Length: 266
Image (cartoon, rainbow, N blue to C red; front, side, top):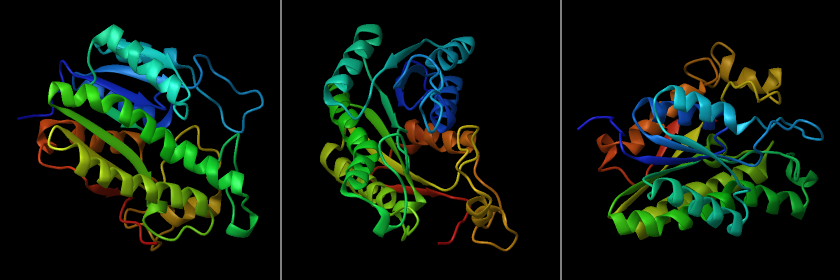
């Protein structure tokens, strides 16, 4: 038993940047072939509150590691686009062994974060679409494939915000709490063939997180503060947890929420 993923095909949503990119690279380092899923094929910054990185760069990085890789453009909130994405994967690889649902966020082009009394119904529903519905759409699309082959691993990305009160981003916290609960329901419903787990991450330091204000980062970095490790997490560290959950070493683990937040107390 080891971390060798050779011969397995992994779909990573939100795979073009940040944590998603790190997951693509680390899974490939351990032998998996990679499907990089993102909303745009090219970098998009105009009119966007955060940049969307080009898929082709991550595809090239994976191929440089000697693994097969394709990029697929899809809005994973949309059922038809998800189903089309999965069909493209089956045409190219004929199987899906691993799904990593990274797509999510506390704010975006279609909704805002903020205290409860500043939120609208639209903000709440969009937070659910981005964080929970996207995970649901992708998971139900690949499960029949995994069950037919008798094996598969789904890894969802949640947040510490879903494990405790989140007054600065309550819509996001509620949506991520939903991800955690639905992960447990999926594990109970789809076993023994398909394992489903979730990682509740803390703050992550990435180039595409300009929204980290000094006060937000201070929660993790202030000596004696709420984080035992005193820093933000690195994408590669969380990607290592993803590799472990995808591997045979985690073969007896399902329905679990792994807290990976540097010992943060909230």
